[in-house]
Length: 266
Image (cartoon, rainbow, N blue to C red; front, side, top):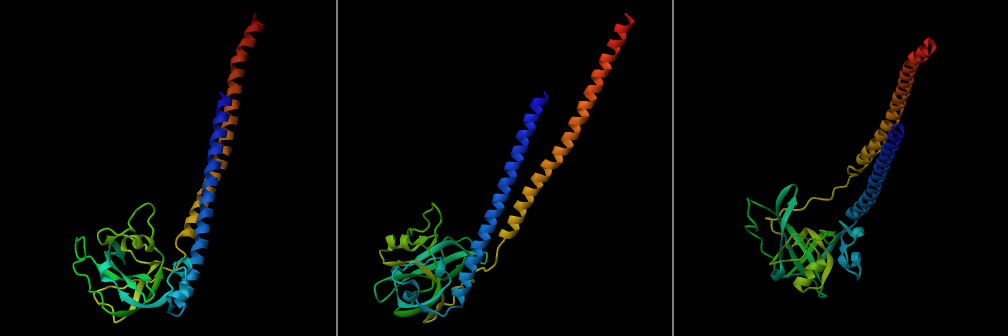
């Protein structure tokens, strides 16, 4: 019986140690995410402080918006293609549900850039915006912040369907719109001629460390709690085992003693 109890105790101790190891690894993972966020914030601060520049000067011939370009302000001129405008559904800005209007801007060299012209708050439960501001005609100059193409895992929200989409994805839009699009898009901050006042602007990026450090502390605390619990129950369990052995020994002595006296009497 004692051997079975020991095996169970060892199995439980190994389980606790495994749990503590997992907690430590999760804590380290959160610290790794914190480092990544700090690095991303540093890039964002640099890009926000940079002076507006032509898009080709920033992206080069590849025409791909990467992590290093996020929130970089660029200036680009061209003509909007209103026939290929896309309504972004199920969008939220400052916790307000609504729509975003994305219109391709065709440049002089034939390439096109997706321009997020602005946000239209939803008035009630409408599935499409009640009024979409008209697209400016003729050449316009857009100043805006670069953003990476949005990706939603295994969803197809980046492929336009009947003039609507859920994500802004340059390559997916290009397949449907038949345009030579940059991989990425720009959130408009200024336009000449001026953007329609019906549009709401976009907030800037969140530049903070997030909750990763505190999550890491929580996981490390759970690991210490598990180890502390194991140490405590090991000590208390050992004392119980010792007291149990003593009581069993006393019981055996009590049983054997009368037998010894009986033998002497005979």
